[in-house]
Image 1 (cartoon, rainbow, N blue to C red):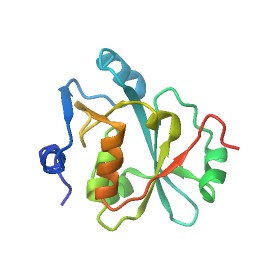
Image 2 (spheres, rainbow, N blue to C red):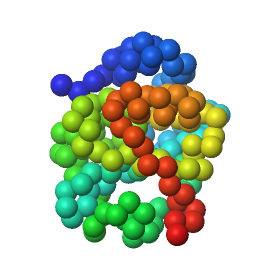
Image 3 (cartoon, one colour):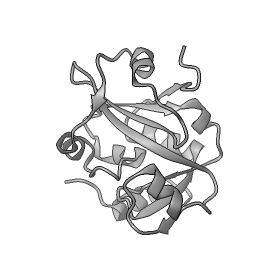
Length: 166
């Protein structure tokens, strides 16, 4: 059974992580998200759930304005022929629906089947904003606490420079 936002918040509380959550209308794209949280400080993300030819899964978390070249990204992580993961696979693996993709969904990846890839430029920011498992809220967390959360979920993220992938 996938974790709820309330269970996510309980985990953050238990870990002593400071966060702030804002409610808004559901958003499904970066453009829609920009309209509802323009006033929130910190980096805003786009999160891509990807699958390669071998069945390996990736969660790419980067700033919303980052241009992602999947061919270059594939070379960075050693993947074969990347494509977007199907909604059913997203739900099965990370327990969320399209439009709610977030690093917080790693709480549901107990088998640690997803390789987490974080953009270096994003991780240099003090505060970051992500959906807390549902796209009608945005939760602000420090980049340092994001790393702690990901590690506590059993993942060792790969930090990559997407501006200059070579």
